[in-house]
Length: 171
Image: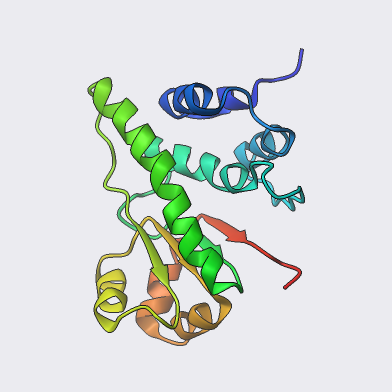
């Protein structure tokens, strides 16, 4: 019998996923065991196949369990398409709120997770906030990443990244 890929997640993350989606899609079932092993993964699947959760859910589970620090930048998402960067932030809010609610219902502490976006449109106030108090998850573009890499504070923030997700690699 094959390993249930959700058994590799924090139990409340897995329970939220099952309640919301049922069983993992093929791309999710293929990615999560490799992610649990810390492997590098190239996931290619059609639109609507669950790639976003395939990419992020193991990292969210690690943030929820304390394996990744929530008070530092642990997950970095990079897309050359600025519109996707904001979409990712919005699309992560639903699972994060759902999992957070599950934790609260069980009386468990939820880490102070924060998702942020950095593009050319990000205000100076938001940029300063992210450098002084890094988000748990940052979605950005290659251009904004290059700016971060060229500053001492940016490099310090990026130095804690545990999971890197590159989207739209072909672009």
